[in-house]
Image (cartoon, rainbow, N blue to C red; front, side, top):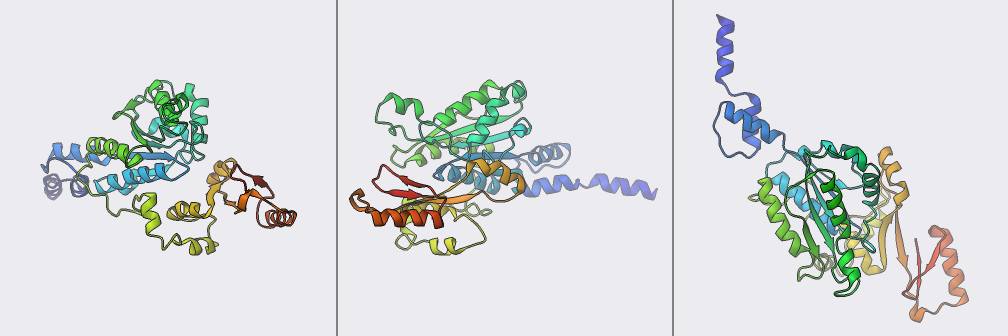
Length: 331
């Protein structure tokens, strides 16, 4: 009789899973019972993987904005994954229920450095994925400049957001389901890529049920800021560059400083050939910096040449390059 009372007491209470789901996840109704439990289980299974590739950081900004919105909109922190394309295991693509891609453009319609490995592997293993991505939903946002190769030219038309369009085409052929129409951010728009991103993310947030959330705070992704805002907030282009460069615990500088350092004739990069190996070892990428020298009128004396050669051997990788800007650059 005592056991029966305990069972009845248990059944009279809502399960812990339902309570947790109701408290931390969005749902349309607070009704208890089997319906409530079903909704809780459905919400608890919500996950989203956000992948980006970008040389300038714009694709990364968009991806992290989506991640913040999802977390603040009810997704559990552990259910929101955000990383570069190359850091993602291509073989796991078929097990992902939803993948959001933010893909920038490099060179002449090429994938940026931290996405080329993913693209090459996906194409090499395309036959393995045929018919296996039917349960995977995805959406794509591409970034580019429609006038990069000249206004109205054929090259500009072909190469505008080409990596995003190519990836979208391959995923569709492999059977993945597009969640919303592909969006594009054009640097020629009044607000650059922010114009297209604003329109695209509104559709995405609505479909994910996170459109009512505010994206303030949330983890350590940092706010999305334009280049001009970053410049005006950096004490006349100082920022935190000195502190970041003096930090010997890491070979890289923070994202905002990567934007700022370009104003001083330099940029941060890493060795693409070593990325996969270093990721397996759990260590950061092999970062380095390009430094461009000021050389008035492009004139270099013998003494300057010897000094540059000495500097390159002592502090750089031994390679001294002549650039189209009539100066030297070293890495």
